Image 1 (cartoon, rainbow, N blue to C red):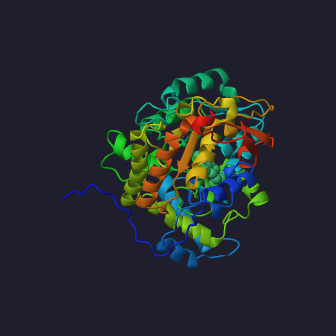
Image 2 (tube, helix red, strand yellow; image 1 turned 90 degrees about the horizontal axis):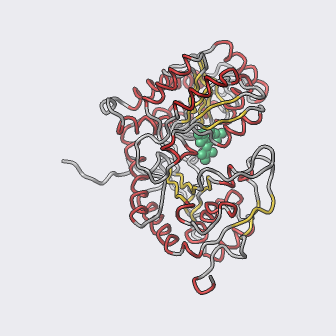
Image 3 (cartoon, helix red, strand yellow; image 1 turned 45 degrees about the horizontal axis):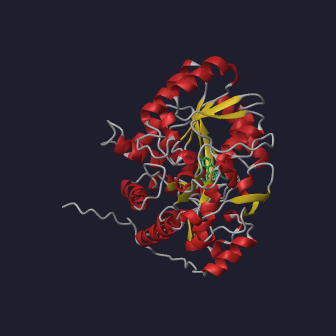
Length: 467
Ligand code: F0G
């Protein structure tokens, strides 16, 4: 007997209340936050889909593991549990804990990337890009063309453009210190990378003698897509698939706040002895001794358990399906999203939904504000506010204007998703009245976290009779 309803594969042992607010309260909160959702108080948010990072619910096994945390400064038992768990999945020789993913990036790039160099990636995540640029190098996105077509339905829209990568390695290879690939491709719609593509990138890197690193934040979700979409993998476990994927690279950076289902933590794992030594030296400078890397012993325990829970089939089936369900419902209502739905998030294509708002007035930012005003839902813009400001201070519109609804792991249930469907449908019906925004104050880098904005036309929404 097969039943079609996929249930949350857990029981809830602890709950946390969420607070309803009125539209007036939300309007006031938004104004006080400078029209920047990052600057809201989380208490003023009903359903928080700002990020899937560090926001997951830990399991009873993780909490039990935390009680076993060994807080010794050096050589703690918890480190060896953590190292064993990471090695069982990645197979890499050196495992260096860090407080989160971007610390792993900073340490790796600090040791391996220099001014004037070029780091290719399918799409750099914003902190990855910032850490490459901080080294004076160029972060070059080489996503295959399919990945730039939001409405196109294809199985692996996170794949690297192999011809473009080869062209860079051929023409400018002396300037490439390493190649990266991000699984799943967060900034490109949470789209997966195929095993065939990882293998092909690996072959190119071997041919041109370049180290190859995986940005592995969502490695388990990517493994699930390979299992369900790529020929030859249906009968393999997510663990076996992940192991194969890691085997093609020389190392990885990881934010354990995603597929480690931990609230904090990350790591850098790699095979090269000399590079690992340089990275550990840098780690000691800013993060901590190499057996804790800025984390508590109990954090290492939570990650060791979480990494393996993230690979459980029942969990992955439920997670990917609940996001797909939201995608199906709003697609049926005519909302343009990046197709097919991503592994950790739905990405609304704000440029397609709000063609009347020019990119210079940040349509995705405006849409994310309206979703909060209407339904108390917090999302995040992945568009020209996030990517438009260039290192030289000039402004260049982003490739896509997306609003990401990212799902914390094991936190929300089916009824939360049904509520979201209603909110998004409502906003879609009033979309012609949505107006753009302007930035009134911004820092020179990573401006989306702290920029202050205002409605460009006096209001975020004009009723029909006032347009
Ligand atoms: N790489 C990718 C692909 C990411 O999505 C993130 C974080 C990082 C690196 C950095 O990891 O936050 O632990 O330092 N992404 C979060 C997000 C913040 O909301 O997508 P971190």
